[in-house]
Image (cartoon, rainbow, N blue to C red; front, side, top):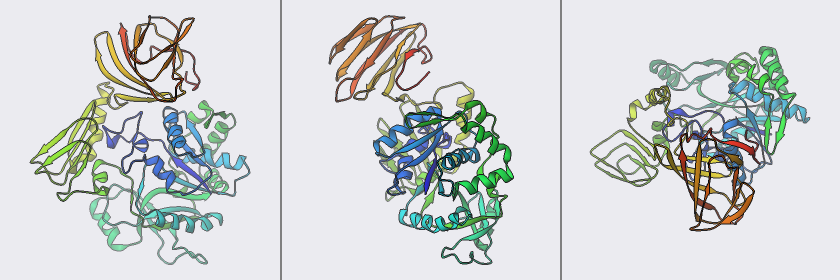
Length: 470
């Protein structure tokens, strides 16, 4: 079995914590581990996982797999083209390695599953079905009428013959219903939430994709003809993949094939599609509150309050979502939290940065926090991982002062290379070629003071970079 984990997406419904450059699948929302790490962990002991993510998130994905000591192959999508093409990339690679008859287990990176034993049990039931050529989808057993999910209608006339599992042929895929229709589905039975998780043989998926969407298959085959391996990353031909139609696996294959089957899954599943959904699955206090971080709540009920860096207090409120981050605060009625996407759209239209990235930004060498910004100056706290090295670079519009707070910096400035230790500093003039490296065994922390006429991140001319960035 080959796990294929879809780790794309921006998770805008969990703004301000989830941002374009650091979306929810990389956040520790449900435990001390990120949702991606939880997804990999619930698989048990697997030799290799295939991740599919976009170029901007490649180092986040690789670092989280490194922390888990998990071997992986990371497909980098130059642009998002939905799930049908993404799965095709993994299937084509499997076929090229002589693994076309092996089963792909396709999972989303941002789901919560409380009962992992039940999940693994249903996955085990799916494998012989997939091996026999069926295209298996996992249908979530509904516990309430839900208008936010699509549904799968099972053919309840009988389970598949000669199968030990409770699998049923798929009668239909149904769009998100209104409340009355959802209530009727629950009363009637035989309807399951569409989880977006699948299992099928790699060659069978490509066979069905070629039958119903040969244009998608042709574009993906062309994109895989010129792949470039770079560390754990697999880069496909950008032009060929950009020409691929944008389509989900549901529309491209699952709704058309006559070999689709659904396996009911009752394992405490949630796609954590909103702050209200996260409140639902979190442990609550006696007043129905979820309090995360430095929070004091008085006379507060049925609310979700999260603070990432300072004290947040509430008094005499109920049914609220309050999420405080260093650069943005959300206060919302829990019943209207789905409309947060309108807030995100308005911020984007105003050309603001708060939907794109956090004040603290992660890089392959570490991270930086923009702690102050003014006219012609910016102050950053920079953390460099042991053994890591920033690119050899220069700037056209700014000079930089570096003050080491802890650790040791190996600094290259022009033709000089020298060490800077705690409480020491150095100055990088405008236009000077320079580089920063942490040669030590502990993290390097320094304060960088930028001054100049333009302080944007695009004023970086990289001359050499070990991470392959432009």
